[in-house]
Image (tube, rainbow, N blue to C red):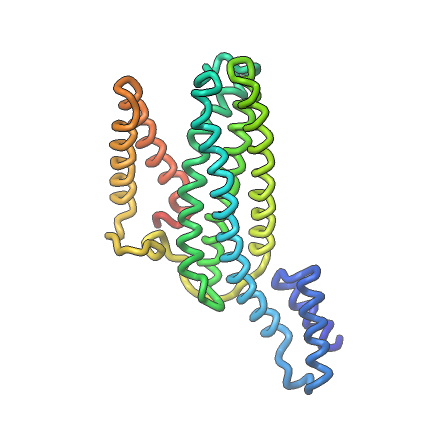
Length: 278
């Protein structure tokens, strides 16, 4: 096996394949014509160095792109949410053409956007902190990609949910609402899926840089006491207070309790996965 064959095999081992692998081998071939093969470097070490650097660069890039795609999708989602009162008002779940689907879409419209926003913001904070590092610890990169892919998954679910809700409630909503919201939501799902694919390619890279993953306290721009559940309960109380004040007297207490339960429940279910708590 010659040097390029050995390097190609090592690149495949660390997850570098396709056009990127071919480009690296082509550039290496050009360099080898100008120097001694024995002094070029061990193929295993070179391939691992490529994987370490690419994993960091591609994961941070995917996080920034994800936040941009989520922001665009979120603006359309917010517009659709705000326009519902002008299109006939909030329809009853029971009025959906297929009631179970209408209920699922309605619940997803409430839960999924909030999770997408929170995880997208966490991914952005981590990417911002790692943006100038040539090689970040593999555990940190893995956590960043987990946050990014989780945000994109819930963001996509949000867009599908508002489209399904508009379609299932078409008997109660103005036609202009359905004809504008459904196509817009589905079109803006495409960038989310595209960024998710790039994040998956970054996840295939096998970085070997040592180091701990850290948690949310490492990403915050301000120092907070490292008491995850205390921060969670404080956030839940703050959001509940806002929900109590924004909603009317009839819906305020219900919304406040629902928001607090949602935050605590998500923190318990996703906290370890997203690096929020040990």
